[in-house]
Length: 154
Image (cartoon, rainbow, N blue to C red; front, side):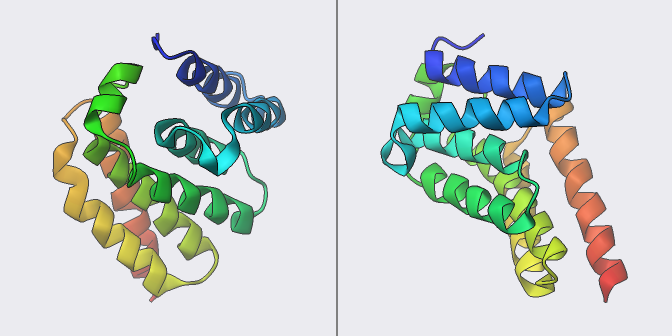
């Protein structure tokens, strides 16, 4: 799948969570990988993808937000060359819409509707970099869903 062994391990955790429904096992694997990469001091691509994935397996929205913010901060330090080297089928810009979507959702859950709208808009501003494939449609559908939830909240 990925030529980068750390990315492959992260992919295993994503599979545990999304395909097998083993959320706790995924969280434990992600925690071990986090230690192995040196936490936030690790390779920014690993930090970004791992933090983005770790956010999805949190039970507390504050923890989810913390991990999503780590992912976004790391994304700003990733290069397209590094992404390609790791075998990730996106550009760095392609990571941002999903990161902002998740942040928008966190802020909505916390009742910070202004923060939620800000990240929704940032995701919308960057969505054009995604293709009309399954991933692109998944993110676009998520943006529509959260926009509707935010409209209903006002």
